[in-house]
Structure formats: structure tokens, C-alpha cells
Length: 126
Image (tube, rainbow, N blue to C red):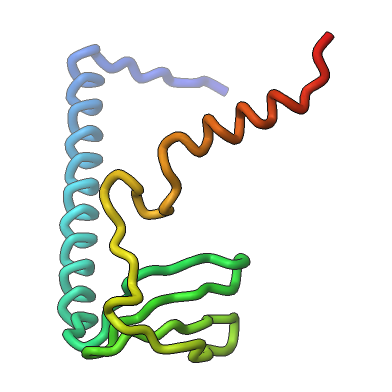
């Protein structure tokens, strides 16, 4: 049995490489455009002027507490795997404004340093 080896020139290999790269870039561009189109489509259909999530706190992997703005009212709800329960209603005065220094967690910047220092105090010294 004879094996026939076909030799291609380096120029043909280079042209094949460029062709594959162009196809790859084309697929990436099409994927990007399709993702943008789907996102804008979903955003247009899910836009709601009357409901807005103000804050979310994750309790466990399947349980959350959320503050929802519904019109002029603020509702605190508990969300479980299969249920949603109203916990209480809040007024605008009861909501705490989050400043950029606090971030979303409400933890000050020095808190990790303080915790680390307290932890170091409990380590036995040699």
C-alpha cells in the first residue's frame, strides 16, 4: 500500500490559516451581535416602571430577603425556593442610604483590618 503525501507550500498553509482566522472572527462578531440583540430585546420586555428591587440579602443558597419599591411603598419580602412571603412594609425614612464609601455591604474599609488584628491576638506567641 502506497501513501501519497501531498505537499503544500507554505503560502497555501498561510492562506488556510488566514481563512480559518477570518471565519473565527466572523463567528465571534455574529455571536456578539446576537447577544446584544437578545439583551436589548429582553430589556425592552422586562422594563417595569412600578416595581424595582432596592436591595437583596442572600441568607442561604435558595433564600433571600429583598426590599422592593412598589409604587410609593417599600416592601420587605422573603424569597424561598417555592414561596414568597411579605415580612413588613417600610417608609422612605426607614431606608438607609448607602454611601459610596460604604459600598453595597455597609462594611467600613477598616473592618477587615480590625478582624485580622483581633485574630492575631488569639494566636499563641512562641
